[in-house]
Image (spheres, rainbow, N blue to C red):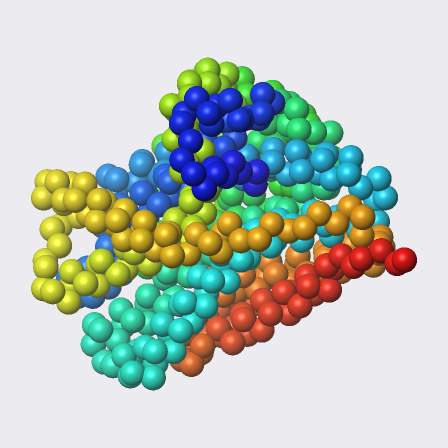
Length: 458
């Protein structure tokens, strides 16, 4: 994703506004940060611990809250703006690299590096926490404490499914741009709407969890490649016809076999996410189409220097906050439980009244984690390799690394990080363990490393 990084010294709203290129799409940056913020707030609202020590989902406890997911399921927006950013990057890369050999590898390597640096830092911390929990005997302890520790080592890393799916979207970005005929122009917003909403449905690849989702479906790999190969004919639906998608979702939920919730819930006989249903696809297209329709209005709002300044200053921290917000949530929930603080019943008036206080505490803890780990998100920029010697073999190797990384991240997100416990979890066709997941991830990283540019021969 393209980002605006403020200088080290504070700048006024007017200075930031003046420094922003005239052709920059401010709505893209706003949707990117805003969609991740909505996910963070949604998780903070939904995840809770029952009196008997079970990690659960408030939506399953109180079905009346499930319509909130029609708005909280905003991952389609992130993939939408990701597609627009990919189109910009690919066009820029084509201008800077007339030689097509190595161009795909350069694109994917740059995208993967930006995603994997903060992700690997997150995994490193949680692997250490898992090792400490095992060596101290916490994970083998009977009762609530041991179960919560084991659940935490699986539940918190689940959010990495998004990283895996996004890497998959990056891998197919060139094909999607070619098939849709989309560039970085305004029309690419609409041509990316179908791929974005369809790809977001791959949250069905998310792991089995009592808190956030349901079992993975073997159908999502087909959805991935199919959604990214759509044609530009989806453009009218993406914009002016978005109410049709919303209506279709409503009818599917009201009169069809589909549940109200657009996220997976524990114990439900039918899930909209495993496999992705027509209702979930309609919801994704609808929310992406709404973003397209609102774009002209929001462009005028974001032209105000103070509004744009808040996006510029907050945007660079969004990904790091996303990675660490469940860590903050689990820390606070476990601390409250250890202190004997009884949580009010979900959806009770006491529960609603305490949400602002809980969110404030979680924002502070998440902010502290972001302050520590944002350096990995910013990281050193990938050096431009336009002058590097073209090597035709790096493109297919980069494509293979994309597939291996895709599965490595997804396996880890499903089985968790308890490498010493190494408990198997079902994935697609059989049981896999954390060691297997990290081995696949490591293989993908090694393959990606081989595609790094080398200096031209003298």
